[in-house]
Length: 518
Image (cartoon, rainbow, N blue to C red):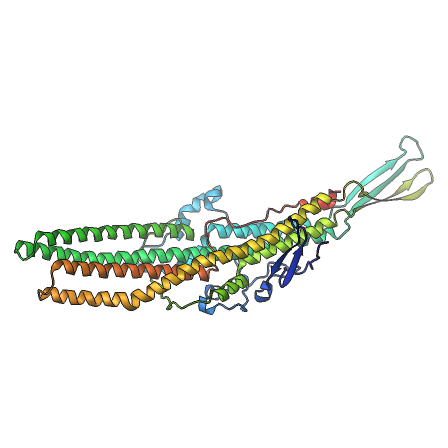
């Protein structure tokens, strides 16, 4: 027998035992106490009441993450329940009546070139313009609308009746009222199923918001690193051009060989190529960043560097528990378990027959008196006891519980990849910025002095210059890798800013089944 689960729970802190869940033996899936660490939405409460948090509050740094610190769902951008249909945005290109305003809207999207563009500014634009967030909001409104529909009872029927019309003087006339009475608390159970669906869509909105912010940050750091590489190559190109001029003059004065001049020009061409590649990388990162934030146009401009704290070692086991406690992705998975359990409860009562009440009142001419008719009827659940739908709902419940296990494993796998990236970048940054770069700078300074005194040849000076330049590029790359890994950890490992958010394809079939599915 199934172990019954209290329908008011969000499967937090419970051991869900599922005998025969699509397997030959009993299976047990442990649902950790996420709801105790995060303010989950109550099952029987409206899901529209949420609390908006700032980006700093919602995305703490890794050092600030706490397993016992709850997260409050952010969905203040979701339209209110009243007039939802009127508050949903429609893209301008899809609305013929608004095409005349397209040019004006584009002006709002275009940011003048010049001046530093900050990460905070791009994050704010992305949260307001990314189309996947609009999709997630629309899914919430859709779930709310269907929830409103499935809990509506059947409309009553009123009409006129007449009997024995061919027998003059004995005819009967009257009016009747007919109403279907839903039994088994089906409408309330319909409402519970769609309540869980609505809560799932709200968690999906929160997860998508984190995906957008994470991808914007990752691409921002990619663009900043390309900008820094471009600046470094610009500086080194200027140095190499000056060195090439000096080398040419020394060859003309017969102080150096032509080999030195050719080596200098080769190095100048190589650095020039790196300069072009850095520019191409910056433009590519910029264009992708503009697409993520959802703007029509935004001219490339200088980006403000982000001050990052010194990298520290992380307790990855503790962080894994913290991510699970705060992950809206896992919360959405648990919400689907609750929805599947509510749907199973709903299908289990479908076989309880509804009653049809018919009451009529009129006048009988044969007896010169009034009359009242009363009929009550219902289906006999002999051939159809909804066995197939119950089995399907139970299978969906099993699938949802296994989906939670899959999400946990996927989080662990993603964390392992990001942990490797973070630790590798952390030790690289520490080594380059603490030892290699200072030593390379000192070696370059000594080599310049020695060359001016004639104590070293020009080729050795070129090698030392190239070593310093490559060390600087490696330090920039390592700092970028570290910042991107940090962004993924702050975003709870959620990425995919332009991937359509998850949705549950619920319709109002439950209401139709409630009223006529016998």
